[in-house]
Image (cartoon, helix red, strand yellow):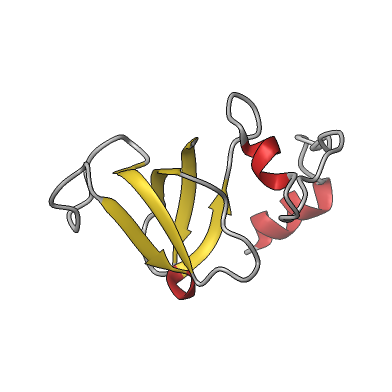
Length: 106
């Protein structure tokens, strides 16, 4: 079970779900349970929180899965797409002076 997976649906807010397994490249749908919004509330299209839900991949834009605290590494070891590992990129938090000048001139 992979808990707290965020599924971004096309033209809708993201939802948080629990997955039995990550969908593979040939899967046409995502099977999940415990569907809720990001703030933990029940979405308006769900009548029974304990049901199993099937979302077609045609309405799924992005799937965010946690890497720590779940068994996703085991699920990805079976030939699914691999996790990207690396160091986080440092973000320069100071704005560029040229950018600030262009913003002020608008």
